[in-house]
Amino acid sequence: MSAVASSTLSSTVGQLGHWSPGFGDPTALGWLATLGYLATGLACVGVARKTPTVLREARLERILWFALSALYLALGVNKQLDLQTALTEIGRILAHALGWDDIHHLIQRAFVLLLAAVVAVVGVGLALLSWRFGNDVRLTVLGTGLVFAFIVLRAALFHHVDSGSWLATSFSPALELAGIGVTITGAIRRAKALRGVSRARKGSA
View (cartoon, rainbow, N blue to C red):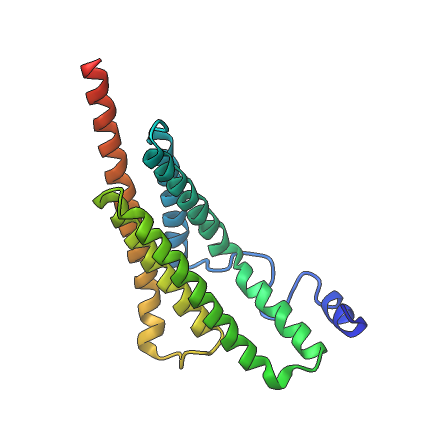
């Protein structure tokens, strides 16, 4: 790191541009989404622990649920830490120190496009993987797809790639909460289905 960039970062200890340690979204909707993410993560952990490990298909599903639980728990923590803002501010400071202000918006657009591409690939992979596991898992992945769409939309608005229209700004919280709601509904339904299978096996034993 250059001396200029180092001194710029060191002068913002405890605060990076528009980011500082604290609650990133302390609104009612922000806390609702935070609790929703954490509850969904815990629900996915519960499903993973109930999923059998005998068959290869079951082991794959178990991995899927653990991966989803890690994703949602991380999203829940990040909802309030707002780490993406901290990373963005670090990038902005470094770009300014390195004299890249003229192409800063191009870098932002490239980042959003890369994020959209990664999310699309992961989303398609999850959809293909979930197709063999039944409707409850598909519902969960559908909800995750809505959350992914919210993440991309939020990034576009944050980096001013989108025009920031009132419709997009107002629609994004609804999209986030809808994604969380659909995901946790699928997880709860899958947990009930696995519980029924476990009882049936015990009854026939």
